[in-house]
Length: 278
Length: 322
Image (tube, rainbow over all chains, first blue to last red; front, side, top):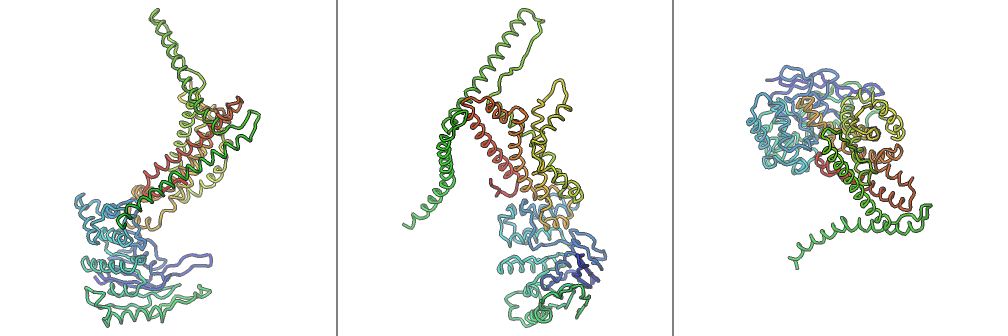
C-alpha cells in the first residue's frame, strides 16, 4: 500500500498569554507499509509532537493523520508507543507489564494459553525470557527498554512509534538495542516511526530520514533516502561511502543550514514557511 | 593473611550495623534518663518533687497491681452475683434474676484499651471516606475545584473546636433505649474522624494527580477500561502518597483523642491524666508521667503498624519512619 500512513497539512498551536504559539505547521508526509522512518531535528522542533499526533495522544490544530484510510482521532493499540522513559509499571513484573497490554488487545481473540504463549514469545523476541518474573526495579535500563519494546510489539501494532527510545541509555547498550530493533523490523516488517537526535542511529536504522527545521512553526526540512541494503552491519558501514554520504547530508542540515540560534524576540511575527521541502 | 580478609570484612560490617541499630539509640535513651533524673530533682511543685525515672518506674508496677486488684474485685463481684442468683433459683424456680454490670473504676490498662478502640474507630471511619473522596478529586478536576475550598477551610480547625458541637449533635441524634455504643465513645470517635479526614484526602489527591504522564499515556494507548485503569494504574501508583496521608492522619488522630478525652471527660487515657491531675496525690505526677510515656509509645507503635501495612501494600519497599 503506497499511502499507508498519510500526514497531511498537520499544524499544531498552543494557546499562550501572548497569543497562539505555532509549534508545527504544514507537515506533509506519506509513509509506506513496512517502512522505517527516522525523525531527526534539534530539541523543540516538534518531532515528538508529530509522534504524539500519530499516536493520537495529541490532536493537531489543523490537518490530520490518516492510517489505512481512517483518520486518527484517539490513541489505540494499533499505534503502540515505546517511551523514552520505558514507562513500565513499577508494581508489575516484566511478564505482567506485557500482559497488561496484550490481555486488553486480545481479550476475545486468544485463549488463556495462547495469550501466555504470545506474551512469552514477545519477551523472547527481545531476549528477555530469562527475566519474566523480575520487577522493573531489578533489571537494567537497557532491559527495561527491551520490555517496553516487547510490550509495544505484543499489541501487534500497525505502526510502531518510538520516542527517543534509546536516548537515556549508554552507548554500548544503545548499540545492542539498535541491533535488536533492526532484527525485529526485518523479522516482523512493522511500519516504524522513530524520533531520535542521534545521527548514526538514524542512518543505521531508517529507510528514510525526515529532518525537521527549527521551531517555532517547525516543518519537514528535507528527506533523505537511505538505500543501504539490509541486513545492515554497523562495522561494515563505518567505511561505507553511501552511509557516510547520508551522515554528511544530515550533519549539513542540522549544523549548517539549520544550526540552532537564539529565538527571535517576537516569535509571533514568524510566518509559516515550508522551505526546501522535499 | 589474604584468606582471612573475606571473613574479617563482614564482621566489621556486622559490628558497625549493631552500633548503628542498637548502641546509638541506647546511648540516646541513657542520656535522656540521666538528664531527666537530674532535672527532676531540681523541680519542686506543690505536689512535691517532679517525678524522676525511678518514681515513674515504681508507678508502672503500682498501676499494674491496681489493674490486677480491679480484675480480682470484678471477678469476685460476678461470682457473688452468680451465687446469689443460684440460691434464689434453688428457692423459687420462677424467681426473677438480677444481672448487674460491674461498675468499678476502670484501671489504667482499661483506659488504654478504650483509647485504642476509639482511635481505631475514628481513623477507620475517616479513611473509608477520605481515600475514595481523594481518588475522586484527583481524577476529576471539577470535583476537586468544588471541594478544595471546603478542605482548606476545615483543615486548620482544631478538633477541640468541633468537640462541643459533636457532643451536642450526638446527644440529640443518638437516642436509643439500648445503645450499642456509649455516647462518649461516639463523640470521641467522631471528633477523631473529623481530624483524620484532611491529611488523607489531600495526600490522596496529590498522589492521584501526580501519577507519571507516561504511565497514563500507556494506559490510553492500551485503551484500558476505566475500572482497570483505576485498579492497575492509578491506585498502585498513588499508594505511597495515600499511606503518607494515612500515617499523618493516625498520628493526628491519636493526639486529638487524648485532648478530646481530657476535655470532654470521655473514658480513655486523656481522662486518666485529667483525673490524676484533679486527684493531686503525691503519686499523681508520676502516674501522669507514666501516661505520657505510654501515649508516646503507643503513638510510635501505631506509626510502625501503618508502615508495616504500607510495606505490605505498596510496590515501593523503601518507605521508612521519619
